[in-house]
Picture 1: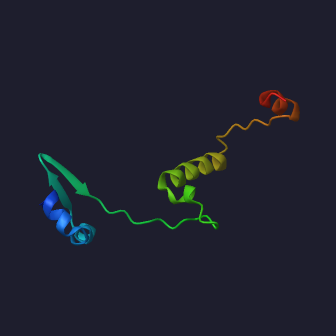
Picture 2: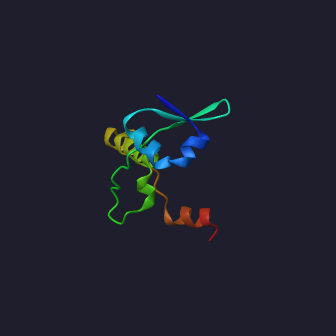
Length: 90
């Protein structure tokens, strides 16, 4: 692990960001270490490049829900037009 002070990091941040791709890099500020963790962008599955799908947490949640649907673990409720109006206060 490479540990650098915040002052040293600020003089050449690109060097340390590139270094973090191949090894652990931490920035020391006082008694606290901040570790640089690179993440690699996931391909956005949305044809319109909707940013909602760029968030990996959203993709995981969608996959979980689709799996529940495939396994039949989802209980669906169909709202009648009357119930929709009631809920919307129409």
